[in-house]
Length: 244
Image (cartoon, rainbow, N blue to C red; front, side):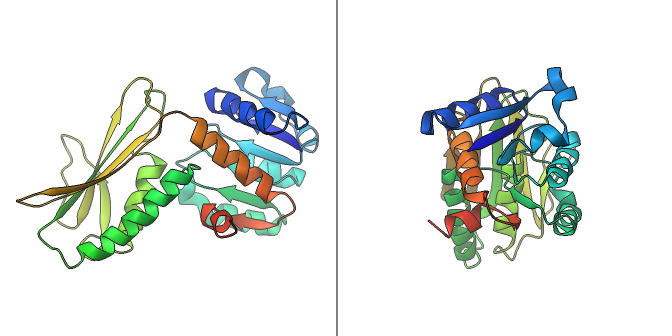
């Protein structure tokens, strides 16, 4: 397979490492960073069987559309653009493109979401517990709360009837009764930690996912890229996991 890497920072380099470890005969035909944006063209994208995009929120949609124009399936790991997902889905359909998106490509995180879904269902009958969330990431991460934290909150909100919204908690912003507070912390060299806590007057229940490195995210993105080739439409991790 031939891969185009849109974004060649720490994640891009980890993805490259995973690809070549899995199959030395695979080829990275394009590596785009801030230093060679002039090479990010439709013609160069066409050299790849699939593209993997890990950049910044302000450039992600433009990058996706360029992949659609090139007719190349694209796996997107950039977060904080999903408020425009319906617009992007429409563009994908118009161009007969292929998009795979996820706030997090870790298999463990996707299991974490399903555990939280089940616990939220149970908590509808345990009103003595109050929920809170915390996420911790490296200092280079731009968005807060993280896309994974937002997705976690959305999964819980689908099931927990006492809550209607999530709120990024700060010193100036405190949650209302119907809101799930999310505390976002930025610390050096933290790949990603997400904690959901239910607290009562007598105990607390905590569910935590802590990434040891970027490796799990990279492996999931490469798995998605290999799975995506030959498909048309919009997909996410639940589609991939349903086939395994």
